[in-house]
Length: 280
Ligand code: NAD
Image (cartoon, helix red, strand yellow):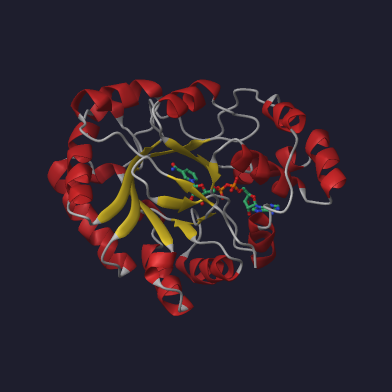
């Protein structure tokens, strides 16, 4: 079983350096996937109200026999629940479904800038954090412009920012912003997402580096994320892939290899655009 290192958030909370994402996993696949991840040493599980599998995550965590405080659980506020009162209600519903009495990390899932509600949602997040019901609070899919709007009314800077980030979309400006503001980044679609994974994993550069270290291209990409200080959240329902994805801490890429992988950037966004995404 892999011993997974941690990163330290701005408020001192330790967060595992890699996690399992359970987007698109139906509840019956979520339970065994979370169990496989926990068995492989993974201690960070990333779910969301919108994934409709929070109850399954809670069930898998409880059945693992691992102490609650040893597992880092993230969930996200869905778009239709933005606003102060709705956020407080949605948070309670999330905890109920998970069967937990606190969350490790809660994120605003999307900014929905046209609705103008995220500062109010954040005010509710700050209260829940001050009450000790969430150990760390953050946002997802915010751009530097959204973060600047938030900063105008926030009293707490988000500790975590979860965004689409992979070698075809390396987000240099966002990485600079996060570094300057001590915001920990998490990478979603770390392996290129379902549609582009084959193209990314099959890239000759990644194949070549993988052969050199006797690792898989997926492991090379995930190691690239962690060496850049990003926390990747690879998704999978295959126990073999989950185990493989966690086994990335017994080798290191060189600075040249890191730079070569970063140079694959093509500013290619594969998911929704945070400025316009408004699905409820
Ligand atoms: P991914 O890049 O992690 O995975 C892409 C594909 O790779 C999947 O089909 C998976 O089955 C496959 N795969 C996983 N491990 C592999 C391996 N070792 N070898 C070969 N193939 C492998 O993309 P994803 O699973 O769609 O997303 C990851 C996580 O990111 C989600 O589960 C979720 O937690 C998070 N996410 C967040 C947002 C957001 O808006 N915040 C949006 C999308 C995803």
